[in-house]
View 1: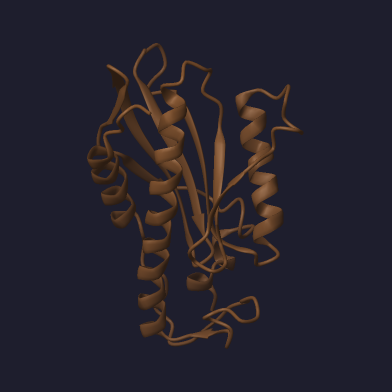
View 2: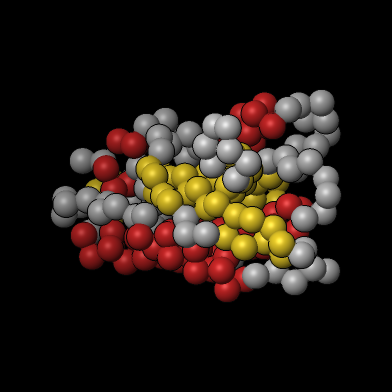
Length: 202
C-alpha cells in the first residue's frame, strides 16, 4: 500500500475544519428535534450545552473527515478515474461507514453521483440514523488550470454545513495536500435550510 502523507492531510484538513464552525446560538433555550435515546433526547439546549455540543460536532467531523480522506486518497493514486464517494458517521458517534450507490450509479457521471449521494444521505439523515456525512470529489482549482483540489462537502446535524477545498499534487505515489479553504454552504442533507438547524431555532 502506498505511504500516505497523513501529517499533511491532518494539518490541512483538520485545522481548517476546526476553524470553520460558526457560533450556534445566542438564545438561552433552543428547541430541537432529536431522535430518542440520543444524548440530546430532552429536546432542549442551553447556551452551555450548545457550546459543548459544538465541540462534539467538530470532533466528530474531524474523525469522519480523516477516515474518509484516508480512504479516498488511496483512490487518487490507483490509476482509475476519480469519482465522488461518500461516508457517514452513525448516530453512535463512533461508527464510520462508506455509502455505496454503485448498483444504481453504474452509468452516472461525477455530477450525477454527487446528486445521488446527497439524496441518499438526506433520506438517512432525516430519519435520525446518522450524525454527520461527507462527500468527497476532485476538481480543477480554477478553469484552464491543471492543478487539482479535493472537495469535501460536510454536514453535521448540530448545525455545521460547509465545503472544504484542499489543493493537492501527487509525486512518487504520494499525495500531498496544501492548506484547505473552507466556505459555508446551504444545508442539503440534514435540513432544508439553515433556520432548521438546532443552533438557529428560536
